[in-house]
Length: 314
Image 1 (spheres, rainbow, N blue to C red):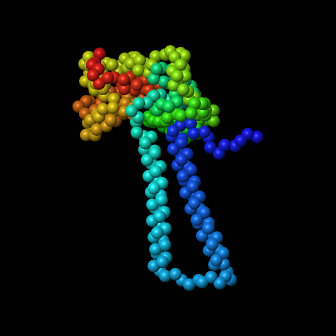
Image 2: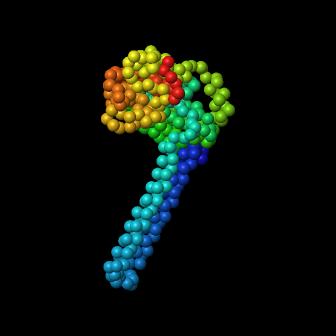
Image 3: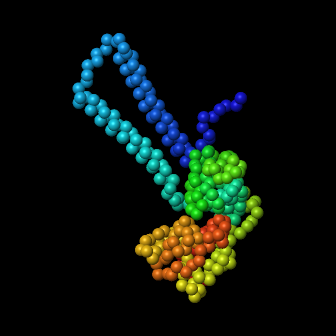
């Protein structure tokens, strides 16, 4: 029989930190369990029926002091563990200065992957080792959950919302990819693999894939064919917000709020245009809900993101 592994290989920097937290919790829990079990054993033996141990009642102040110290020590330990774990989780939420961005769409019952250069995969994800990878996740139908055990990462993907998952793969190899949320009759078949490659091999892999239009070019064509250019280009006679440089900027709304134009905002503006009306503009844009697939929404968002700050209307 082969050797039984207690832990899966830690194939990302996030997996190492997660395993550290798990090991720390096991050690702390073990020490507390040992302390409590030892006290129970000592008291059970010392104060057993028939023993000659002194059973005088302790002073009231002694009981209160013990209870206070025990309560404060437990609360302090809880806060320390929470702060330790939360600091690592918050670090994952900070957008990196540089990352390789890959778009993933979950649908019954597959993962559709598209790289920024237009390379497409189904139920496979090729990534370079030693680089920060940012997955932009969307669902086309029901709730899915992108789960890679070797990376110790799992992200639920909810229809209508854009989720982000960041990780830094460190070990070259092939790892399992699952959907960890029951999503229908063929949920158990929604599996794939993540292939971590050296940077050189990854670059070679990209060049060997069938060339297709990249996301930005595909989004530009959709922007024109779906009629978006008729309102949002500078030459348009319709008064609509200009999109050059809008991504990542602060957008004032008609109700006085100010929001950041991120992926979720762009998506909501396309599907629910009357939800966040830009200050100074009328709510005349029609909804494209049902008229665009998840892949088309991803391409349009990528195109809007690509518009330079100094780009003038065409």
